[in-house]
Amino acid sequence: MLLAIAFKIRSSRGIMPPSMREKRSLNAICVFCDSSPGRRGEYGEKARELGRVLASRGITLVFGGGDVGLMGELSRAALEAGGRAVGVIPQRILDMVGEAHVEEIIVARDMHERKARMYELSDGFIAMPGGIGTMEELFEIFTWYQLGYHLKPIGLLDLAGYFSAMERFLEHMVAEGFFKRSHREALLVETEPSVLVDRMCSQDVVYHEKLEEP
Image (cartoon, rainbow, N blue to C red; front, side, top):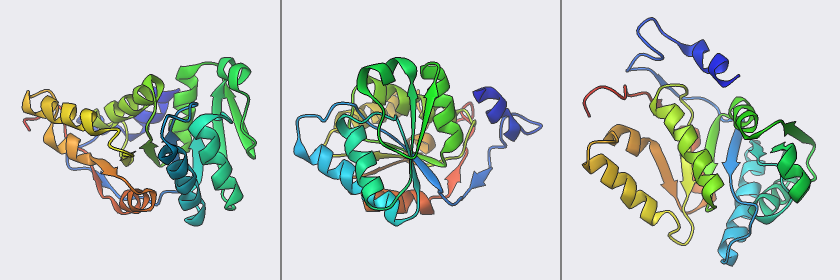
């Protein structure tokens, strides 16, 4: 499913020409976040704030579909503020955590279908603090951008310095020649939900060929 979507933007010389860029209106943003609340109250507070920010800008929230942890805080806040939320959840996880009370829930067969559907529905992606599943979703969508499968903005909502070590590791990848500086700079990092969403809405996303020299 995902490859069929991605290959619609093929060019004659590859997936995308190196100079291709795109600025789009963000009608829906997918937020990768955890089914746990974390140990800091700030995580839940900023999840609720992000939900309200998306609602105030008329941006549909696409998320993991659970009613627990940061997912629950985020979706409830968006709905209470008059926004729209779409949950995408595999049946196995639905059986464990229960679905959020949203106007639309999509039950996927497995994690692969879940991510493909979230990709289809979204114009941009935000990762909040979370565990290994959140990181896996972030890095997969970032890999798709790096390889030219999409030109959708990607942001980190960095709370309490949660992503500081990861940012240092990304810089280490650049220094060691495994990660292009242009790709590193495409990842937007902010500590305030409103600032991050505004930057994503105004970002002119550029595709840089991965195999070209930095």
